[in-house]
Amino acid sequence: MSIINNINKAFDHRIRLGIMSILMVNDYADFNLLKDLLGATDGNLASHVKALEKEEYIKVEKQFIGRKPNTRYSFTTLGKNEFKKHIDALEKLIGK
Amino acid sequence: MEAKKYLEDITEIKNMMSRSSRFISLSGLSGVMAGIYALIGAFIAKLLIDDHLQSVKSHQDLPKAGLYEIIGYSDLISNLFLIAISVALLAILTGLILTIRKAKKSGEDIWDASSKRLILNFLIPLIAGGLFCLVLLQYGYVGLVASATLIFYGLACVNASKYTLGDIRYLGIANIIIGLMATQFIGYGLYFWALGFGAFHIIYGALMYFKHDKK
Image 1 (cartoon, chains in turn green, cyan):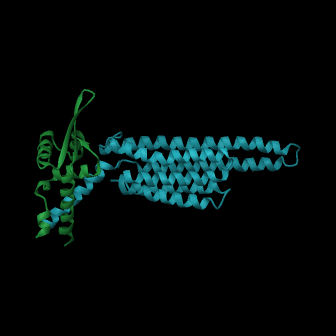
Image 2 (cartoon, helix red, strand yellow; image 1 turned 180 degrees about the vertical axis):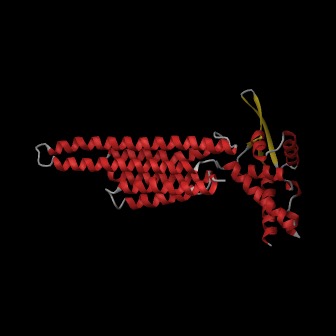
Image 3 (spheres, one colour; image 1 turned 45 degrees about the vertical axis):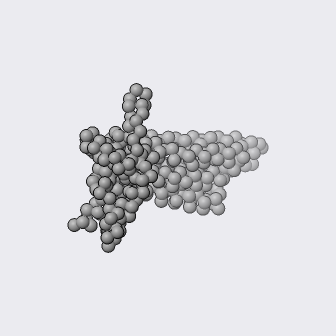
C-alpha cells in the first residue's frame, strides 16, 4: 500500500516523465532541447511544463541570449526528491 | 497490465536520461578506419626503423660512425613523429566525417551540449598525456613514449565513456593495460602501439558498428 502511495500522479505521463528524466541528468535544459528530445509540440510541452511548475517540481528561468528570449528549466529540491521516490516505487512494483 | 506500464515508464526514463546526456552518434566505422591507419603507420615506422638499424650496422667500421648514427637517429625520430601526427589527423578527420554523417541520419545535432561535453572530457586526459610525452622526449626517455601515449589515450577513452555509448570504456581499459605492460618491454613499443591503436580500434569499431550502426 505504501508503495502505491509513492507513485506520483504528477509524473504519470510520458512527456512529464521525460522532462523530469532529462532534468535529472542535466543541470538545466531549455525549451527547445526538451521539445526536440521529447518530440512534443510547443503547446503540448508548455502545458506539461506548466503542470510541473505548478507543483513546484521545476523552476523556470527566463533570460535573454543576445536578443533572443530563452527559457530554461531546472528542477527544485522538492521535484528531485519526489521524482526519486517515484522511480523507487516504479522499480519496486516491477520487482514484485 | 499495470506492471507493463511501469516497465515502459522505466524504459522511457532511462532512454531520456541517456539521450539527453550522451552523444550517441559516434561512428563505429571510424574506429575501424582509425585502426587501419594506425596499422599502416606502424608498418611504415617499422620499415624506417629497420632501415635505420641497417644503416647503423653498415657504417659501423667507418670513422665517425657515431656521427652517422646520431644524424640518422634524429631524422628517424622526426619521421616517426610525422607518421604519428599524420595517422592521428587522418583518424580524426575520418571520424569527424563519418560521425557527422551518422548524426545527420539519426537526427542528432553534431554540435550540441552532449557532443561538447564528450569532446571536452576526452581532451582533458589526452592533452595532459600529450604534454607529458613531450616532456619525456625532452629528457630523452623515448622508450616510455609508447607506454605513455597508450595509457593516457586509454584514460581519455574511459573518461569519455560517461558521455557516449559505454563500449569505449573497454577500449580505454584495454589500452591502459597494454600501456602498462609496454613499460616492461622497452624497445618493443611499436608492437604495443600497433596492438593498442591498431588492432583494438578495429575490434572496438567493428563491435560498435554491428551493435549500434547497423540498424
